[in-house]
Image 1 (cartoon, rainbow, N blue to C red):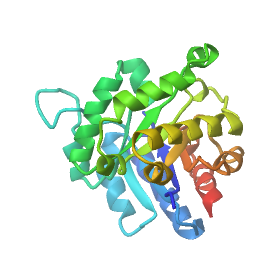
Image 2: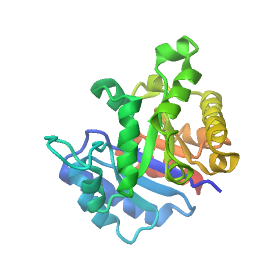
Image 3: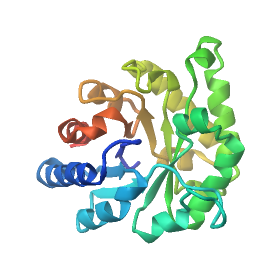
Image 4: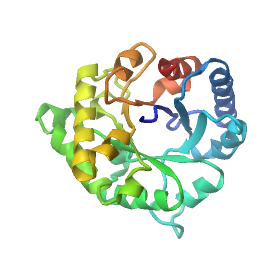
Length: 254
């Protein structure tokens, strides 16, 4: 059975004290209210990682992740953070290939393939993001875009490596816009992703791969989205900054 995951992406928000306060609220709510087997992952800015790991100790349902990692193990890369550094503070996940990284920082599929390799080598679980822009969808290229992002970004991995990935589908046109893909649109792409994985590896691996939906997911639309056969949870942006909203999304899987 596929693992159900709800991951929060705080992006570049919250100072140190604000982050600890929000995470503490989430931990308490998860302890009191979450009764299912879903995994909660909070992906914070780097400054919070060590403290969040400490606050979350003993809470099996909660894991901590970073929002990015450099492709090199170490070196003269001023301002960057390595996968080894992230793992050394106890974080277990890292978001790679988020559309904002692709758009604002020019991250390519080739670069992301290297980042994925380095993350896996340092025992981090990548949440690998893929998704099309509004223009690409309008031109009917969304399936081709998804296919190339998978092929060039992660399909070089062997089966053992690929099994450690979480895939996140995020329609770029639905991120931070308040516009959400319909449940049918989201399911269509998630099903396509699973078919591509099956064709590359096997149906068993495809059936075991957790695929998340990202793109203006909130407590109102989460139940319908998460009810789709191929949607195994969400990568949550804005709603993850409000403990009540975030935990209500997590509770959809109770």
